[in-house]
Image (cartoon, rainbow, N blue to C red; front, side, top):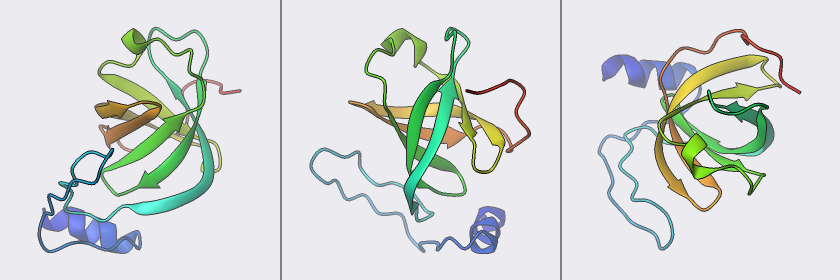
Amino acid sequence: MLIFRKLAEALGLSTSSKTTARTRQGTPSNKRTLTRKRMRLVDGFIVTEGMLTPRACTLRDVSALGACIEIWDDAVKPALLRDRLTLYIPSDRKEVDCDIVWKRNNAIGLKFASAFRAPRRTYA
């Protein structure tokens, strides 16, 4: 866990000394040890194996271990968003594999499952 705290400090993210378990109405309980940094209008794309084209999304917040995104397209089939997806961030020109931790309406909680890398496909 010490390595994640050092990584978070290097990225400019603050860490919490203890895990909080508050539940706000309409949001999942906060069980994170790292504080998430709110993002402002950072667009991205998600893609899964079953998708023919990447879908647009917005990063709501991000930490060293994961992110929360909001999908723009209501037509994404729930069956396509089961376990894992790839998140592409055009401003950084990087993509990362993510595990889906939770879903609520158009918001999805992600846990990074790989390191950020150069994209393996073309995004529109």
